[in-house]
Length: 500
Image (cartoon, rainbow, N blue to C red; front, side, top):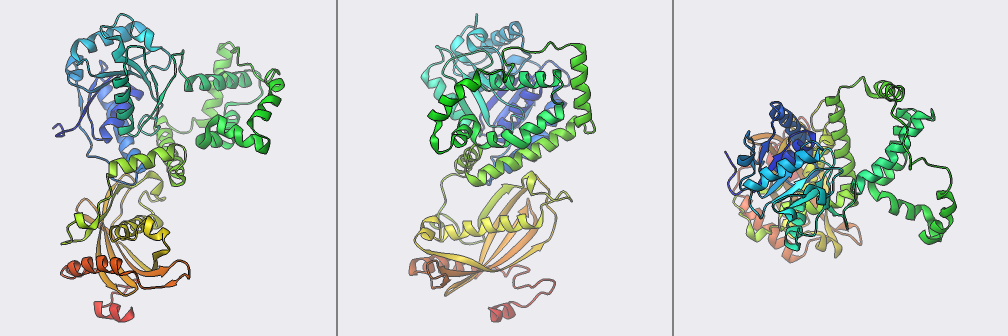
């Protein structure tokens, strides 16, 4: 069944890249129609979807929209009719792409965006002989499409400002980063940089300087870590030191003319060189199946991206911006019903939150509950602006119960009940759910603090009023099971209050 009100994308060509596009669109709430003449296309896309469901939602700290439907269509016209975005990912043969565009344009609307995943062709080449040349643009992604946000966009003179803006907003809506090239060029930007490194790596192997594993080590233990957060030129700026980029570049001219590189040439891929590289690659990674390497890659990418997210830097800044967009405007207390526990969390469990047993590790429960506490406090007025003025709540005591396991990729929600708001103290109780299953609870004792003296202090009247309003409403709710319990030993509610 097609999700009501969902936008529709079509994917033509369902290889690794096409499957990745289908996953990114679908997990961002779009319905996706897939066309591919290969009989194995559907299981291939379903395998990509399974990997994406485990990895992609965990990038964000809010719940993604309801997943759209992915359907498979033998007839291309049926797949693209009415689609808002059509992504072509067929093999890199220009005559094949021309045939596909003719069939697409015969069935799609003039308003539809036709993006090509091509890594090499220019839009002027793609649009040769097309009925509407400006409708076809390069939209070149990177594998895995559902995790890596970059999409290189190359438009033609007939694309038009309105369509360009729709391309920009659509890609941002699905959590991608559109990089618009200033003019068309063979292989765009990123692949030209990759090709330069690739050529040099081939020479290093061919000349017996290094093996494949050693070259990979040079990247992943060295400049690759810098590039992941700051790219090439910003890294060079830091390396230039206080003397500055201008002076560093003026001194680099002689070095750049030296025989450091063979980028202008490429070694002949003889059978001997091919066998050398293949054998070294087998020795380096052959003990793991491709599916296992894909899982490892995805988990590592999630951890790297979430690390950048915590620092609000690089690709992490894009994730935070998408969090704000998906989460919508902050909902205040006045807009919420107080007749039940307040909703304070909804998210997927990231891959890097799983322990060796495959389920969410202990300290991540505390992180999830801590985020829920922050959300509850923001609702009653203890938000970033309030804290900046010099007052806050500190957590004095925490008790977490683990009731059922939650695996990576699981969708969890948290609700919060206020048990006590009295003077400087507030006592809250969180429940964590996976669907209708209660998986954990947490009880926190909070103390209001003056940040200058770092001592307990009574909150101002307006904050007390909001807390009191919630406490009065929640006083009619049943006492939650586990409230007032110590580790392994339940105590009465009266005993808990006396202990306070």
